[in-house]
Length: 397
Ligand code: SF4
Image: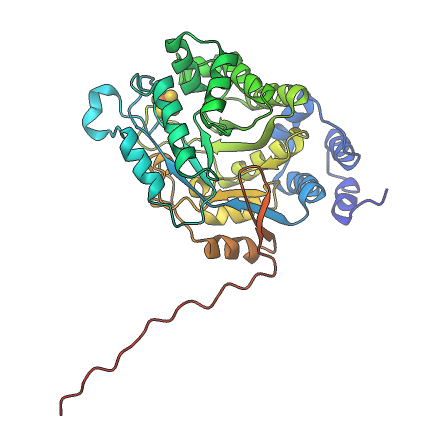
């Protein structure tokens, strides 16, 4: 096995701790790292070292390919029966005046607004309220599919599913099967936060717990369907809680293979009940992406939401294990901006996303939700932009 140059430098560095060299050797041999080694990377791995390991894995899996999709979000409501301490988004019932509650017709209108746009996915996620029950969502999914069959419906998390199934008195397996029959095609990764109850009980008490979150994904995977997973990091958790979180995902993925993408979500502290908790640095964001890439050897993709971490950090993340920077968004989500993200009106044209990726020497690929290639933009020429027409005004002498 020839050793890549950057690894050679690491392995010959007299200052690098032997245990970190051992992890680098494992990565070179494509071996899985242990729980303790995951904690070690968080405690002792410097950014440059982690970048070499994570980028090696990223390029082994995908080369320079960097994925994005053309999507829009529907957020049915920002009112919620739960009270997660980190949530900047939910307006509790008592603050109802600041909230929105879209009707079925409102949401179908949002879908028809994109009728002539080449979007491939609608991403539906929001707060939890009693009127948005199983019947409501089944009708919504089936009406979207009836209107536009090729639009991929990626919707709701185990937080909503646990709530609506309990209310309807159906078990998870039955519930997920009914959702699939209604038109659900993928599940996004939200609601995972930090699995360990020591932290979960403090920040997201009452909503579905770790076991329930994992069980719902497992039932979904058993139907042959795919989903994503997230982790909310950088608040009151310790490093080992992050590793514990990823360990539970890795274990489920070994059994089902149903996860596509892991998405670390940075805790933002604007307008929530944890505003006293400082946010972590960009360095920590990049270290976290890198460790996720190293730890989750059985996940194909690591995604950074550019709308949450800024365009510049998204570009940097492509050297730290990330191979997907999500979608065009078109200013259809409020989740990041309300939490204090730099992007207050997130939206990028396809051309801007492609340029963002090319600027850092990567290879842009527009994908659909299941990572089928829609357009390879490596040698793609965008048509000349239509120049504004100028008309001669009559000159009055
Ligand atoms: S994070 Fe989700 S479940 Fe928790 S309060 Fe906010 S909207 Fe509700």
